[in-house]
Amino acid sequence: MSIIQQKIIIMFIMIAVGFLCGKVGLIDPDGNKKLSKLSLWLVNPLLTFMSYQSEYSSEISKNLLITLGISVAIFAIQIAVATLTVPKKSKEYAIERLSIIFSNSGFIGIPLVESVFGKSGVIYLTMFITVFNILVWTYGVALMTGKVSFKETLKNLCTPAVISVILGLIFYFCRITIPDIIAQPLNTVGGMNTPLAMLVAGSTLAGTNLLKCLKKPKLYFVCAMRLIVIPALCCLALFKLTAVGVDPMIISIVMIATACPSATITTMFAHTYGKNSLWASEIFAVSTLLSVVTIPAVMWFLELLGVTAA
Image 1 (cartoon, rainbow, N blue to C red):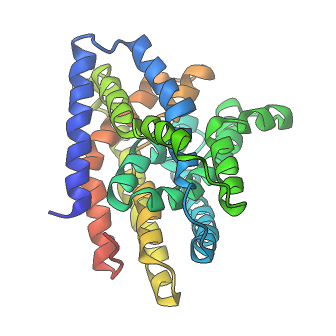
Image 2 (image 1 turned 30 degrees about the vertical axis):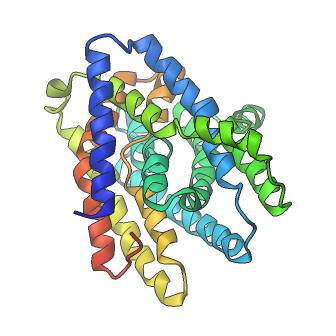
């Protein structure tokens, strides 16, 4: 059993705990929203910011730029696939396109990358998440609303997730080190990210009628695009980069983020903009369950192509 498989099993045990908490009412829908907000607005950004509290290295700086470039290319592929496979005539095309394009790289990706590669891996993952946040708050909002507002877009970009990356990079490149007495509690709070994210994912699944939604053929199409087609295309597009000196760890990290299930933010957007939030949550639930099989499969496929980093 690979390290990634072991970590995914551990994470899904935590998801199962969250599922049970949701079923018995220990975490109700209101509590789930609050935990989700706590993770998105405090714990996750703190983990991201603290990942930059490492010794400056020209090699890391170069790799950050490489990761940024690769992430832009990955999202271009995802947007193209979603646009080509989900036409506007589809009733819920906005939700389905967002579910295909945006993976759960924060809730699922960060804990998984951190557990496999440590903080050094999270640093590179933040580049992927930065592109994610810029696109989801511009392209994603425009897709949901059918209109573009520069003022609203600028406001939406001022999120803790984006701010934590900017501050982290400033501290990193300016070589500003936080005193240990402050760093320790911040690291402790940031360390809550994995269990908190898994509890939220589990309790969200508990509120979904899985048996009912499993009977919807379109659900499998969206999940197949998100979990199989896009990761396979991206693997084929990236695996030769190791031949030109790109660190295999970077490719593995980006592929873990790409292989994650549909993002929770799609459900949040559906609630906010009056779309079909039930459909969004069903896609999230089923893709999350299926990812326990597909993420290891994607990483195995990457290894088969000759890229090994974990």
